[in-house]
Amino acid sequence: MEKESEGAIKEKSADLGASFIKLGSSKHRLKVWNKVSSTAKNVRIEFPEGNDVIIESEITDKFPMESLERHQSVELIAAIHSQTKRKHVVRLIWEDDAQSYNEKLSYPTL
Image (cartoon, rainbow, N blue to C red; front, top):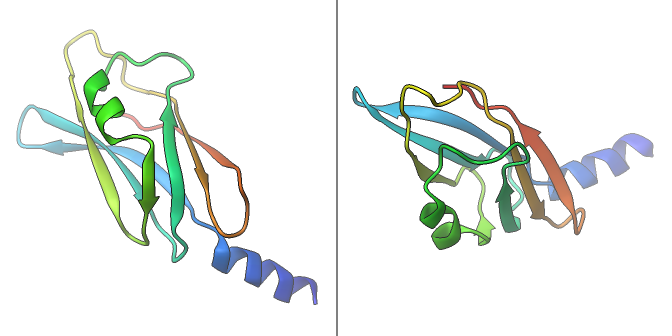
């Protein structure tokens, strides 16, 4: 019975992640994606240790996202320079059919 309940919750849960991707020799993006079948709703992003890499207009233009479907992703332009720290903390917050509040810390590196 407990396994069935866990399975039902998992089917209704979204799972978000974030990582940096490199395009060409000098362009970078922060990619946020949903890797499971349930849709994430009201997706928000925060930088608990400060944001010195993602262009602010990228965040305000794209977030909060109304929904992020299965295997869908969004890319944010990253402004990388020689003083940019290599490891960042990203807090992803969303709603799904299982819970009205989900939060996950991700640690993307350059």
